[in-house]
Image 1 (cartoon, rainbow, N blue to C red):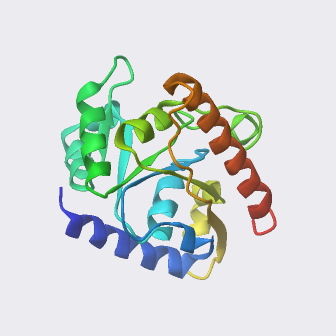
Image 2 (cartoon, rainbow, N blue to C red; image 1 turned 90 degrees about the vertical axis):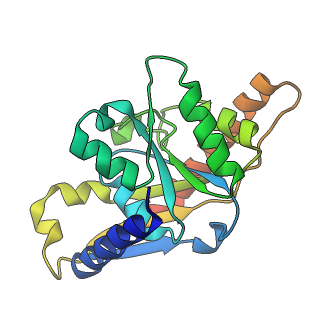
Length: 212
C-alpha cells in the first residue's frame, strides 16, 4: 500500500471534480485531523466513496467486499489504495485484526454500515437500518465513529455530469464523533450506539437536503 499512490489518485480526482462539479462540504472541522476513527456513511451509489475521498483530507482505508479483490488488476488497485477485503460469508477475523491495528495506529477506516448499496427510500437516511459491526469495531479499537452523509453522487451516472463546467452539485456533511459504548453490556451498548449513528445520519440528511 502506498500513501503516495492514494494521494496522487485523490489529487487527480479532485481536479476532475473541480472542473465538472460544484461541491459543498459541511462541518469539515468535525473530521479529526489526527487520531484514528471510523468514517460511517450512507451508501446509495458507487460514486459515494470517491466523493468522500475528495472531501476528506485524511487518507481513508476503505473496508470493501472481497469480490472486488478477486481480479488481479482490481486487487492491485484496491490494495495499493489501502482498501481491505471483507469476506461476508464468514467471520473474517483476519481483516478485523488488520482494521483494529490501523485504527490503533491513528488511521481512518471508511465503512458503509448498511452493508451495501441501498435505494434512497430504503437507506438508513429514510427507513433503513445499519449493521452494528461498525459499533463492534469501535469497541475493539477504542475509537469514535464519525457519521457522514453524502448526497448527489448518483448524478455522476450521467456522462453529462462529467463535462467541464457542468457544475454538478453534491454535498458531504460530517457529524459529531460518537464515542464507543461498552455499558451496561457490550451487545446492548452496540444497539444504543447504532441508534445514535442512525439518528445522526438522518439529522445530517435533513440539513443537507437544503443544498442538493
